[in-house]
Amino acid sequence: MATITFYGAAQEVTGSCHLLESPACGRVLLDCGLHQGGDAVERIHNERFSFDPTSIDAVILSHAHLDHCGMLPLLVHQGFRGHIHCTRATADLLPIMLKDAVGLYLRDLERENLRAERRGRKTREPVYDEADVEKVLHQLKPSRYGKTFKIGNHCEVCLHDAGHILGSAIVEVTLQENRGARTLVFSGDLGRSGSVLMNDPQQLEKADLLLLESTYGDRNHRCEDESMEELETILHETWAQGGNVMIPAFAVGRTQEILFHLGRLHHAGKLDAWQVFLDSPMAIEVTRTYDRWLELMDGDDMRELSDVNRDSLADFLPRLQLTADTEESMAINRIKSGAIIIAGSGMCTGGRIRHHFKQRIWDSRNTVIFVGFQARGTLGRLLVDGMKTVKLFGEEYAVKARMETLGCFSAHAGQAELLAWAANFQPAPRIALVHGEPKSQDVLADKLWDELQVRAAIPAQGESIAF
Image (cartoon, rainbow, N blue to C red; front, side):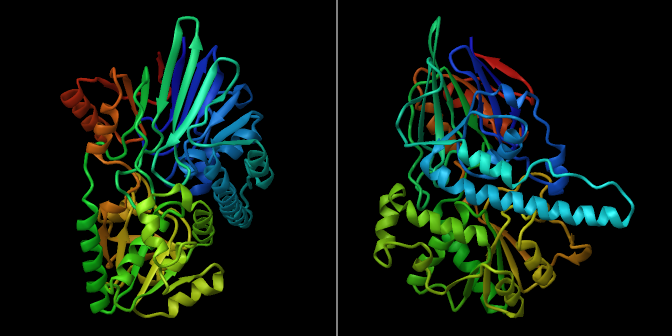
């Protein structure tokens, strides 16, 4: 009999990590993600695996966001030596994501250790380093969408397009056990139907157990046309009052969609005279990676892009300036008005966006536009919830900038889309809700029962389900 144990993204959004155990496949980890929120160094040093990494036979990654892959360096540091299965595009993104993350972690740890030395306190050794990232990359085993591969002799895996970000996958695992075949489907993060650049999530029809994400299980997103009109209005009003716009954005997925939407406004003559800055070395590199994989993306959007430039997302927005180095980033501070600044991190837990907040969040002429989910405990969530002051780099700042949230940019399916995708499985599988906060999961579970007559489990951290 197979079991799945939930070690992360269980009644929470981040830290995706689920352990599948069966005689057919051994011990296989679905995702190995980082929890987000709070102090980065403390968060990483407090991470503990509730299993022996040396006992894991393989890892299957749904996609390259850090809350799904960010703990892989720690896993290999502690002895994991198996293959890490993912799509080819995910394998192309992982060096960017993991090298950037380990660099930030080691720099933060160095600063923390310097402070500790000055105060006569004990310093800490890193729990992983660049060498562990290189091990992760050597253990990758990429696969195409729709191509079945084996883990062991009695387990077949197929990755399907999840439509969330470049390379994102729905994981389908078929186990040949003594009592017959058993199928587990892990949705990963499901994208939205009709979202720009990405294809719609692929529909699957058969599963004995479905692990279904529930990030937006309690709500539906606004339609794209409404949100685009709202974006146009926010930009025009901020321009009229002589302000600037700051957009915290994930380097993978959200940034590229924002550039595409701003490019549409530019070509429609609706962008005023904004200067647009992509102020994130990682997002710049990721955007170039997207350019190499344009054939994976939505055909209608690619035809729109090709009317202007068929080879580059960045060139779709001619007024875009890529500010990779620190001096270029600091030069943005001299611009008093008329700047749209796109920077990481997406939940404001680190990165250059915090430096731009320091320069501008206290000015009521400016606007912050949130375009993605903000997890509990993150600075982004606190600002969305109305925090009046913020501490940045040891100083307190009044929060006077206008705060706006645009749902159309979410890369996650909304409630109705989750229900429609789950309804495609016939007969109805058992469902376990993952990757969501308790309120969202409770609402989605009620909807699954009311509309599909399916009872959904909401597993807690460390809980197991046999199937």
